[in-house]
Length: 392
Image (cartoon, rainbow, N blue to C red; front, side, top):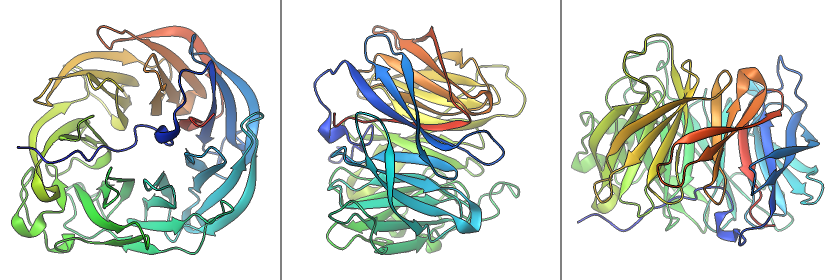
């Protein structure tokens, strides 16, 4: 019998999702170094056509590689991926104009943060620092500013075999469980999704039943002393993860090996790998790095982006079993789709082609989940993250 659900937010602010508005405000994070980008850009998104209409620069800020809008719609937060000077920034959000006003900015307490999320109470932000391999938690104060950190924790464990990509721990993604008791951290260097206990009152993180540094579990297995992590096969390089709607399955995207590993969830936050499937079409050869993974809101389809093959892989999800079947490989119409987002109604998928400076809209077939380009292409320099304002 599988454990109680641990479903994560599908999109930041989903708790505040309104009923079928005509349009949403969209914020797009970018890379500013060596590009023409100014920072975070705002768009108006039409729910009927899937079209993005530019509203201009929302905020000038360096390398905002991941952005999150608070569920109350009043504030937005971004990580600034700028090496040893990396930071996390808090903004007020004007939902009408899309403009962001900086409230404060704090050191990220690590190098190159690449992901930011909220706990389920909306009282804390959590960030993953890639280069330094650590995660940090900051409280959100009553005025939306970020307070002094409540937790900093470095990922520990055995490094993967890829000497170039896995020379150290590399935290790439962090999200909270539905119950707000556990933080999940995908670490590319350790070939693990680490599971830390989270205290929602204090905003602290602890390593759980046992420190991951003592873990020696084989790929796909969980030993009793290693109950709070899920291990993929050596050299996979976990980047992001997503959960099934019922929380019974976790899907871990392997950046280095271009795979999705399906884990079945059991008691005490333990996981067992039941399938590993490629994100690439048969016969593909050449360089590829996966980037983003997302579950359709109906739970029937899973999507993953390929950089190199420059495509979105489409999978059917087997009801009850959670396993995947490769359905299609759809070109994104650009280079290096680092991120994509599915609109709140599940009608469209928006793929951000980082090296082509475009966001391409695809219609999602209501019967099969397959993707067809609508012809709408929005221009923005080096897009790497897209989020919907679901509070308005």
